[in-house]
Image 1 (cartoon, rainbow, N blue to C red):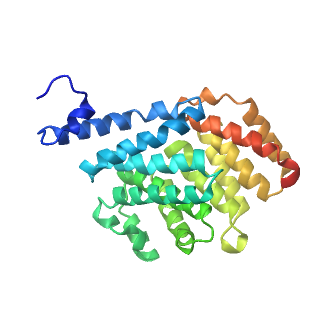
Image 2 (cartoon, rainbow, N blue to C red):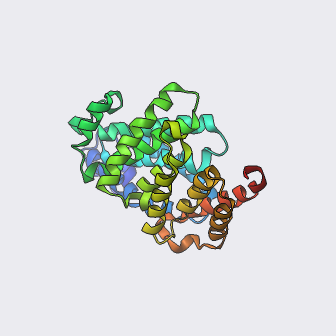
Length: 285
């Protein structure tokens, strides 16, 4: 074995008998490093760093195409990057990134026989397949559903994107049943936005939206600030509840984004977006 080479360099050496072992060890280290990215206090640093890191992961995936850790990192990473840093400025680019994230999520899920060609299944077949999902499938289900929903939100005129919404809801219903605490109450936040943002004729339901938002807020003791921001943006605005809108905005302004270290980056972004949203109060109400 050649001495003095870092693990990643060793993994990329052609013909090295340890390349697969090294690649998988590197993948494990990348996955273990997620808290460092999530805990970043400066969103601009994260915005600049994440694309390069994700491209490195895609490079590693070329040599280990079925690695679940790499696939999960890419589904989560591209969906998170699109939401945190792209969606507000460039919907077309965000749509492409969400679609990219969904494809990695589908590849992760497809490692299980029941989930082969999941995106092509009929509603009944999809429901049957999802009955076989277990805790190990939660990450793939959650980020695929999140990416599909983000894609539809960013590409409202794309029939394929819109067709993904009911499938996303089915996947997230299974996540909610398996692990409602995943991603700081992410399944409840998904359905809070889902029911608040849809017209009543298409399944919108303000009472169900409120129930899900309140569940998400309670789960982390109101320290996951995306919950307040999303409730402010979608529920308060849809209900024309200016008092709630302002109260949530004030709560976000006073909140400590470091109170939940694993979500420091998401919290910082939530506070910045809430401040910008408050400036539009007169236009929204």
